[in-house]
Image 1 (cartoon, helix red, strand yellow):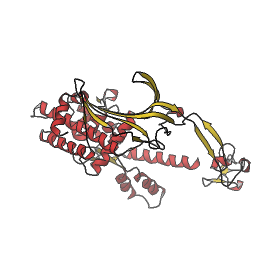
Image 2 (cartoon, one colour; image 1 turned 90 degrees about the vertical axis):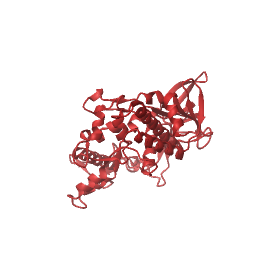
Image 3 (spheres, one colour; image 1 turned 135 degrees about the vertical axis):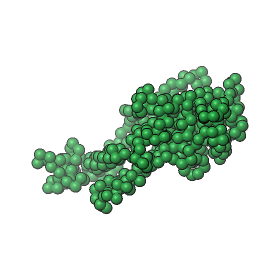
Image 4 (tube, one colour; image 1 turned 180 degrees about the vertical axis):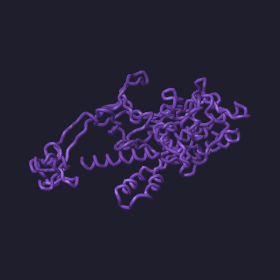
Length: 418
């Protein structure tokens, strides 16, 4: 498929679709573990498949798949395969700047070293993309708040009839969806629906059980420490009551009873649970759909340019971007979480759904998808649309910096005490 073919499909087709049947990497019948929700529950539902009501479980949600597609785009653009407009918040640079006034080795210095590990957060990683609070609470190199920058102001004027600004600053927001709910208009802020939707579902499922046990090679008995393991003043534990942390002059036990298990020693009695025990299934189905009617609703006006030409150029580039995201993500393989690796039964199929219901299969490799995107961007720029080559770099505000540092310090303290 070349750029001319793609433009013709964008003009009239209904959708691009990818479908693949998958099995666990361990083979058919091997157990996999879906994501768990509140109470250790899985996202279960019954679907109509080939005239039958079939029990199914979500293995990867639409939101999670979107994150994986965005991650694939970010990796590709950082590898130089194409330029991708985006906004980034650099916590490393902010921490380095603040360290100039801190004493090396001090508590503040160490906290800033920890802040550096946050790294750079881009609009492809922020949950609400260009409208995310992380960007909102950051400033550019001149100290200007993001919403006051040229790119930030695009959110104020963006609409289905004027998506040119977002095309320039953060086009992924146009295909993965955006709601400017944290802006000055609150819930009335601009909304863009998802144009690309992907999900992974296990079909015809049976839930398993989960076992738990531990054999302590030291054979420490439960009674060895009950009532005698104390929190130490240094933040660990001790058997010496003289070294115990006090509360109202009373030594504090580890946990409620001071048992060895509270400090991860001793045996764990074998047990079984039907909650969170994984699933087996007939097959898993990965489905990705790029809605062309949704893309065609977006308009890209450029002063002095023919609207039909700029609209088609912008729409074609977004479809090429969606295709690149999906193809690049699929090429990375599927490892969703621990014990949830999947492989295709046969190679997945890309299809074009025509407006009259006709279905045409196509092949698209990662390199071809990147070349198609580059060609679409070049033609869009020739039509008058802008495509930012380098990211806009922001720096977290003092308030956001302090909030992150305080949160990480509390998390570290809680983990140590636990």
